[in-house]
Image (cartoon, rainbow, N blue to C red):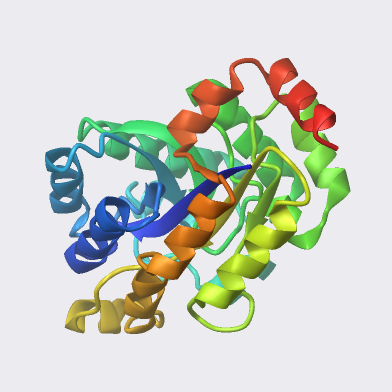
Length: 274
């Protein structure tokens, strides 16, 4: 079995980024995805490159902070103060999909301007399938930038959406696992995920939120000190030993794309393991 452990929110703060880098160097975190509209993103990008982390995903953002574009170019996405609507507000609002496209492409441009290479797209607060037109937009972006997409539809077992992505020939893992009980994972929960995944074949992703907490993080995110608990989980020696014992191969999204080769080969490999 092949496993991607992806740390969300790289660049949210310098200390979150430092924690993620540590988890990639000392633990089993195999990839990450960056928020680019924060004040700490550019310094975090520099840190990544200095640590030979040259490729990562974009953690597309529309539900926290401010946009990259001027407010005049994304009016449907922001409130009267020029900030993105909250997660709950965003769920129920109609947005201009052209403004979404422009904002996300501006985020991609800021990401690539640092010298980092884009290796996948995922979303902060999982809005990829908010509407049919949003889903179509992410398919468009995945094709344009030739990158895989996080399999958000698999968390809800939405086979219709999963087939929709498959028909569009978008590369995705077979399943995405995320913590459902606590703001952070436990070792036991991760092993439970892996035992389920071992019954199938192919590639699965576990998303996580490791990092170090500081006062800035406490001001901007409700998920703060719990990130340090998540980091410890993915540096836990018993979990590392379990992965070795079960011959689970850790991949980044860049590795996944190389391993996959052509989509047809990927599908044949999965079928042969059922």
